[in-house]
Length: 411
Image 1 (cartoon, rainbow, N blue to C red):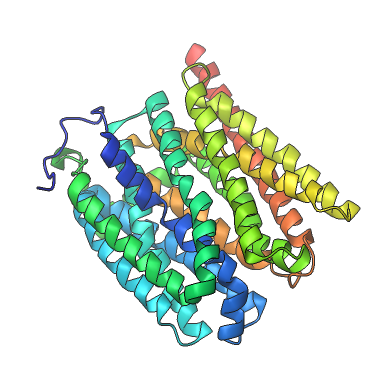
Image 2: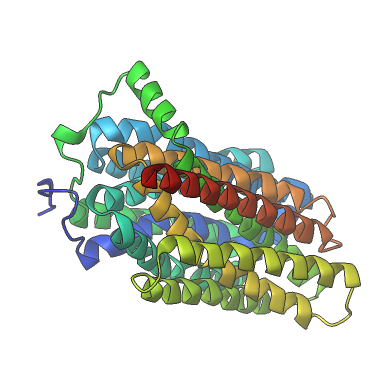
């Protein structure tokens, strides 16, 4: 029978099967993006759309993820986590089916927005469940472990997508995603209990929801870590959305080779998260986050230099792409844990704002990297560099605020 009894308190341990389910729910973004990346050129041919319109399906998916999280986050602080999670996953399956049946690029763009919106419900509630039960170093470690599990998705997804695009086409990929949504629903129903006791819920009223969002947005330390996270995601998504065209159209790799290279970079992200989770306890999450942020800045500067130098060899750019994903592995888990720890009493709203910032930035990055028309890597390099600098600026501001708060405490 499904578990429905609320846990005794916010520090109760999270069973492995529950953590695996939460990771699967969080994996909708890489799964729904990376599985059909090898088929992007085919989408353009089948639906008579240019590269910019095809990349718009990535943008609307990211906007949907942002909107879905903003809608459900504050509501879940009042309604609880379980019921919205189950309802959202049912709608996710329906949206995947609409993508598979889309007769035109316009319909696909709209269906992708709906797929993102409903997928965002699972993403925000997965983070909220962990924040309901843990805090501090333990929360950062669990977020990092969950991202290791989630990191399997960008490794497997392009490989599966590359293998499926040939025999079943990009529409078949969306049928597979629909099936995965059904699996997510079954796992959530069986293994994810309610994590927010009634006593800790906030009223579900427009004014109360507005106050909840306002309270989160006026917590400056939270905003600093959230902006650090979101800007780093902009760098990652700039690479993700540009890589199919750079590796296939510019470098001339086949969809299969592209999938292997993309999976290798995802291994870098997953491996860095694994190292990060092992180091938490020996080093504070803030220290490890600093390592990730400044490594990202150095890697982005190197990428820009490589593209400007216009090397004939492919390997310098491929190596920098790998290092980019490795540096981000030290950012996501630590920034998420530190941000949500600053707004523990409103974890659903905090998770929603974090996700909305994340995927809004991703939505902006997707069309920007397409401005070069698939003929140059320069838009990607510029997007990554600007995003890295924004992440560093947000982190530096947060460091200054932490320093001032400590000084006031000592005084």
